[in-house]
Amino acid sequence: MIELARGRLALLGLGGVALLAGLIGALVLVGVGAPVGAGRLAASHGLLMTLGFLGTLIALERAVALGRVWGYLAPLATGLGGIVIVLGAALSVAGALLGLGAVVFTALYVAFDRIERTLHTSIQAVGAVAWVVAMLLLLTGRTVGEIVPWLATFVVLTICGERLELSRLVRLSPGARRAFVIFAALFLIGVVVSVALPDPGVRVAGIGLVALALWLARNDIARRTIRGTGLTRFVAASLLAGYVWLAVAGLAWFMFGAPAPGPARDASLHALFLGFVMSMVFGHAPIILPAVLRVPLPYQPAFYAHLVLLHAGLGLRVFVGDFGGLPDAVRLGGVLNVVALLMFVASSALSTARGATADRLHAEARRAMES
Image (cartoon, rainbow, N blue to C red; front, top):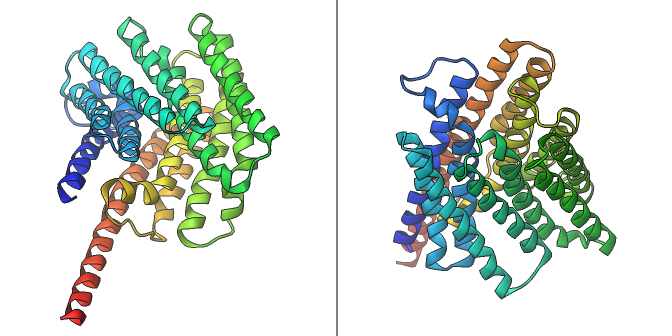
């Protein structure tokens, strides 16, 4: 059991390297000084954060849930893909590893489907296939910017599928479930169209994102659990804040389509991948990490510090910097977001250490009483 936990920690560590490299790249992109040679990390910032970090984290969680040894090839390949990017190897090599991770990740859902066919796993499986499509497009010459809609499909449908699974606790009506499928299909149709017609496709996908955000805000159990205390309220706050940013991203996609690099693109990308996705990571980490690593991660009120800083920095970046035309606000907001993510890592590690120490002391106390 200890060796298994160490192996999972090593895989998570690969994702952690990608996260750190991606944050360095983020600082370069907003014009903050960074180590020599970090310019190439800026160019790979999106892949490092979305696949090197998130892809490894999500694939590891799914592999643990399935419990098959071959499933761990998904986070291993994805994590190594991130390392290859950090080392500056050819994008084709990184793309091949990330693609291998995507294929095995999709195979995990085939296995889940054979165990039990459900709507939420089907939705997540579509997200996995979107990851495969993104890698195929990348390896056939498309730029990272051109595959963004497919990367978004991977993370959005994976997260939405998970929230749909938990919605069974509120007993969704058949109409609500049908509405979810329609909204997800609208989003997916827009993404598919964007391959040939980027601007109209992204606009349609944006409508789907807004619809999904409204559905989640209305039907997610977080509407009820926000009245709770401790970890329950923290998770709910993270989720509900994330849904707001999902709606903001959808509106930006609808209004601006597939814009060239600039403020509109910066706002739409970071509202989705930072405001929505990272808020989901913050909220789910105290639940998922203990299940994956078999270590405690006790809730601490200090968790609100990185959550608030994430959304405050992003709000400054998007509404004052991008939409307000103030580059300094973009820079400051970007720095605050990097700090928030580093605080998240540090607070999670500190809480885990405290929890492990408390467990050890309790175990020693029990042994002393039994002897």
